[in-house]
Image (cartoon, rainbow, N blue to C red; front, side, top):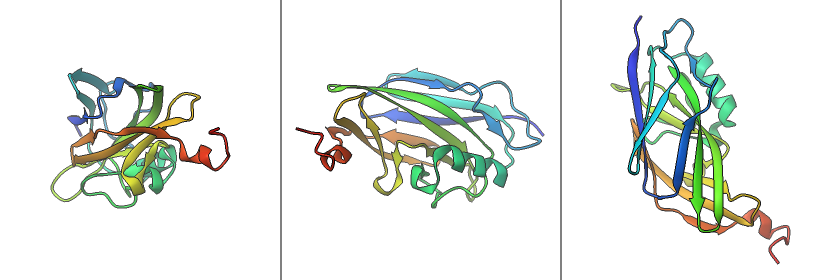
Length: 179
């Protein structure tokens, strides 16, 4: 067993991401697999490169943990080789993503997990801000009546945060809280 450099990129075409950090203690690797330190995040312009150095042996236990951390299939997305949720993953970890908009700042916790599909390793993105049926991140903006909606795209080794929009939070419409 040996480690591999496992890289995934996130391109911020939304131009709203102002920070992305690894959440300490969230790196979970399949039992018996080696890892080398915490995942790292580097950026250049609109491109964030995340790297986790670990072995590649997928297990159902890691997928189950990922599914629980994300909140289930409704909050998980793999642009290539996905489905409703992963049944086995090599590893996963959490990131904190900060956004800035004209209506204020927003932040969300997301998880990235690596599986294997066909001839390649594929990546999953998940978290409570992800709305899989819309293929979007939807993040409340602070304590305001607004939210940021960012469409998602990608490949088996990348994610793209597409240009989104700031909109009134529809859940507040039903409460009459938007006077």
